[in-house]
Image (cartoon, rainbow, N blue to C red; front, side, top):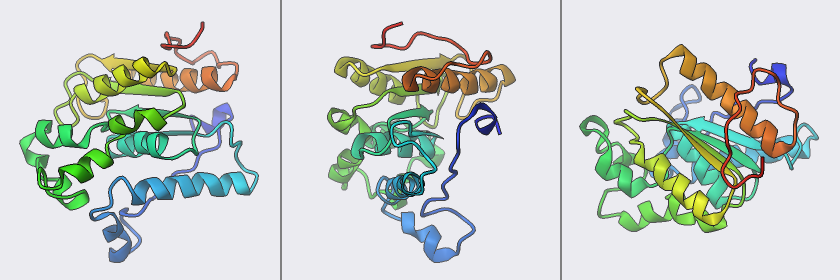
Length: 219
């Protein structure tokens, strides 16, 4: 409702691996994280464009955590979306395998492969390693106390985007962990996305949009 009330159409994709569609559908993500999910969100966006329901020049994607990884992967490995926002998402799978907390330290074994045995696969599916093929604006929203997807993931991605000269921004939320909990930060994150997409798509921002500096983008 936040987005539709401000003129945006929204597609919420239950990509392969999601619950509620049977066991086979849920198992589609096994060993295919960074493939199946990206293919499905891109197919959804392309369908809307084909049906005349979305503007191919104004296709944004966003997601948090695993959805943040899908967002960065879709932007880095495909040429469908024209802007994106990753909330505490994964940029470097190999780095995550070594840095995440103990409880989820082997979580990627079933989604990608054994680490470090399958390091090449981790590298191939890491958005940070495909920045050369990324060509659109990206917003990164991150909590500075995140133990699941540590802040270095967003920082590495931001540095790579800056170096390439793409419009980008990193907003680090003090005292936030994995998934924002403070009401003022949840509100600011939404309004920041609104401002970012409005700026990059040439839309007049609504009064509630939260202005901030976008790197590599003229004021």
